[in-house]
Image 1 (cartoon, rainbow over the protein chains, first blue to last red):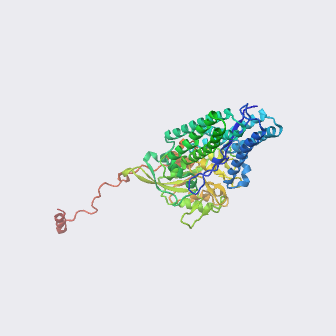
Image 2 (image 1 turned 45 degrees about the vertical axis):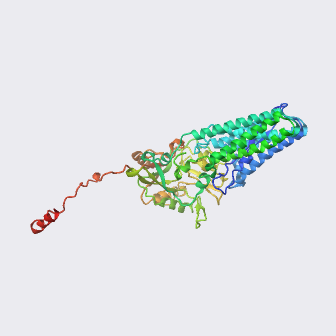
Image 3 (image 1 turned 60 degrees about the vertical axis):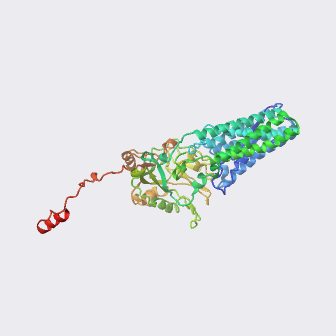
Length: 322
Length: 247
């Protein structure tokens, strides 16, 4: 038996930005689920029922994520076209990789659940496709130069580790009815710790970075002095300001970071240690609490990821630096 | 195909905008809206146009900035539209092939029949050139009035973008910025035309001309510093009175 993987699949399209109070937070936070496509060394139970629940959860989450991504498109019926430009577009690559993941994952599931055989090759391929998908998702954001808070090397590891964390927490939950599995619990503890370190590193990096562009470089008038917006081109909001402008979450960023850190990373970390120390119901209860807490933490940090991003276009609308 | 042209033509059509001359009248933005409401990108949807919070698609927006402090302070009107970049990330991020850059003249366009309305291109543009048409469900942008500049039913002098044709101050110029001998290229060279946000690496085609240095004295107009009396001082009684009252 071979080790399994956690795959996470996100909504393959850019989400609505939570810029106005009427806008719901991005659907992708809920879709950011690792789909524990597993195939463990003796780490996981070989029971077909376990395989069924874990794979159903994983593929179900992937499917919800893909469907959610369709709902914000202006033309859903043309969504298939998004698979065509994989040569240049990370968004297109994400779509291709996400759909490709179904094939080895389905083969892996069918072999395991119906034939009782855990295929090393299918499991490894499913894992690989899932990891490639997460990388593509991260690169959609990391490749955007107009948003310096995304255009940095912290984004990719954060996406990978957040996916590993949410997957490991789910796995630790699903495995509970099948007896103690210290390997999975240890994986959850390590994944939460690594994800938290990466997130804190990201926050420190974006807080410490100096401005990439200013209203002076945006207008080219910086050599004449400080550039201040005197009169906006329009009196009400437009697409640019609604999509990329101001966010409520930014106002509460520090508070939200603390909430994410304590409730989303700290508590799941401590709770994930419990099954290692105490088997039986205390461990099970801890695992059942850790998974939803970890999810809510990822939801908050992902909301902040969008809310704290400062787009270069805001330099034309009164922001002095990004 | 959202990959950039492998062999782009040296022809790079674009605009040169003179910030020294622009008076901020918004005529370019209005004529752009007018033309494109009937052109290839039509309609440029307006939502709630007569409401308290109107919203609509515009390809050209005129900002006004205060620059500098005190006596050195000045007001600069700043029209903003698509710069038809040489390295347009808005094109390469497009997952469908709807966004493309023409090999023959460098114009960046959206094929509205292919666009799925995912909005990623608008996030990839640092200049805010793209605006989503909520009603049509597709992204729209400046076409450099491709339906005017190549329009053979127009007189040759009218084959220029609507914003350029309408500018009452002649602050906008249209031409081939890939040709160093063109009028626009010479204008850029003479006036120190520059790129917006060059640090982003998008290599915009459109150039902006900086405001000229402010004149601090009138001396350079050739006028004397003090005006001499137009007529010689009167003599006699009036002259005596003038001298007396001038004490």
